[in-house]
Image 1 (spheres, helix red, strand yellow):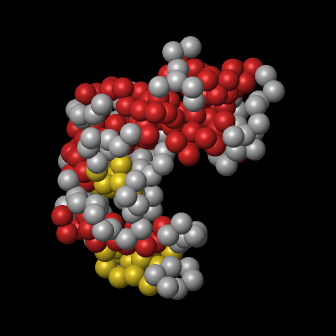
Image 2 (cartoon, rainbow, N blue to C red):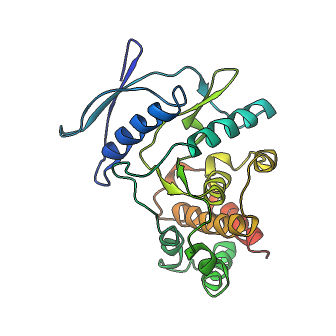
Length: 249
C-alpha cells in the first residue's frame, strides 16, 4: 500500500522470517549504502500480518530490454550491496546450502518422456560430477546477496538503479549471485554477457551454480510445480533445453 512517499508492506507469508530479515537488511543497507534501497521507517514485526513501512524509491522496474547503461547501473547497485557488512544481520544465515535447491529437481518423479526426461537424467548424473563438491566448498569471497533478481526488483530512474525486496537476502558469493540472476526466468530473454564482463567471479563456480539454478527452475515449471501455471505452454521443454545446454549436452 502506498501512502504519500511511503510504502506500507504487509506480508502474505512470513514463516521463513521474511519480515525480520527484510527489516534488518534495510537498516544495515541504509547505514552503509544510503539511497541504494528504500529507507526503513517503521515496523510492527509482531502483528499478524507483520508490517514494514519504508520510503518509496524513484524509478520503474527493468524490462526485458536492458540497455548497456542499465547493465552498468545494475552492476553498480549490486557491487554497492556487496560492500555492506553482513555479520549479525537478523535472519541472515551465515551460509545457505544451495545444493538443497538442486535436490528439489532430482528428489521428484522423473518426467515420463521427452526433453524434460532427458534433462532429469542429466540432473541425476550431475550429482556424480565435480560441481556439487565445488559448491560445497566455502567460497573465497562472501557478500550480502540479494538473491531475488526478478526484474521488478530493480528500479531504474534514468541514471541509476536501486534495489528492493530483501525477503530472501543471505550471505552468498559473487559467482552464486550472478548465477541466480542469469538463470532467473525473468532474465531468460536478456543477454547477460555484458553484465558478466563487468563483475569478478570464479568462472568454474559460476557454471556449476548456473547448472544448479537451471535445475531448480525446471523443477518449478514442470507440471505440478509451484510456477507451472504462471508461464505459457512449452516453458518446461524450453527450460529442460536450458539445463542440457548448460550441461554441455
